[in-house]
Image (tube, rainbow, N blue to C red; front, side):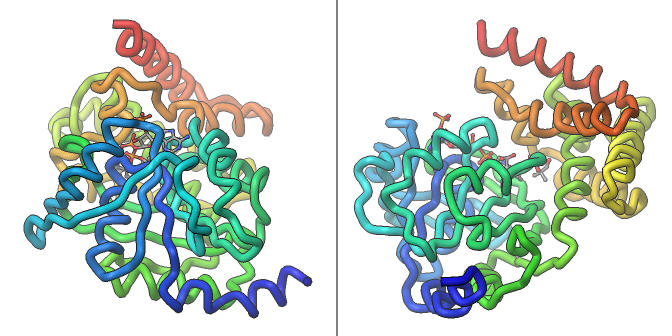
Length: 324
Ligand SMILES: NC(=O)C1=CN([C@@H]2O[C@H](COP(=O)(O)OP(=O)(O)OC[C@H]3O[C@@H](n4cnc5c(N)ncnc54)[C@H](OP(=O)(O)O)[C@@H]3O)[C@@H](O)[C@H]2O)C=CC1
Ligand SMILES: CC(C)(CO)C(=O)C(=O)O
């Protein structure tokens, strides 16, 4: 069967009561999976963290958003304990865990299973494509700010939306079904044919905010209080835009900066995921964000000194946090 006919014939898998496997039941997995569950979908949460799994099965999920607090029963398990094949996999592990996660769910994948990654960082589609057909992979970005208060308990405030498209940017019918599924659950999602530029723009945003917050412990609102810190964030964005351009990716620096300012204004107290990792003594996604920008710059013969320095500082911070 050709990729195209597969894409057409199996579009209905996402419309008729899909089985959705959320892989990585942390802040984002619980937020997205929780809203899909609340909308009546069949969702299984998969994680490696026994405490996360046990708590979700015992207390269910607790979502605190601008719409209020909701609590709902939910099912979580280790991948090996799940048997029902998945129509849709939403991958929300940290990027350094993608390979392990994909290996662990091989038995749940059918040829027409759609895998969506809204993970931060560069190279997500390539990593997933080591394990599943690229023509069934969707990628994108999300500005949802989600903080894990405790296992299964997520707090998210402020405006948020996601952008997505199939990784091949062919826009098969199943991508429309995917966006419709998300929008009907209140997960505002826009299809964007220029998704790879969108991903680079989000990486520029994360390279600026996440690493500075991870090194200093500041939230975005605190960065905005100090002009020198704002200038540092601006330099990261500028350097990332130059790197993207050298790689042939067109990026709109003013638009990226608007998003950074939006986060400082609208999500002043959200701890970026990298800061949450440092505070919890976990490894960070620095290699997929600032590190990936430095690597891309090196490949094109330019330098990215601000990103390199932040990368070095986050690695030290990470070492101190993990080894305490
Ligand atoms: N939080 C946010 O506001 C935002 C996050 N993102 C991105 O979303 C992604 C997820 O972030 P976030 O939800 O914050 O991360 P979390 O660390 O809160 O959650 C990730 C979960 O995945 C689990 N996990 C690790 N390895 C595996 C595996 N092999 N199989 C299944 N589960 C596994 C982790 O367990 P353990 O803790 O034991 O490792 C953890 O419970 C990241 O790429 C992040 O950059 C994007 C936008 C906003
Ligand atoms: C929520 C957001 C957009 C803010 O930094 C993010 O991407 C993160 O926390 O990793």
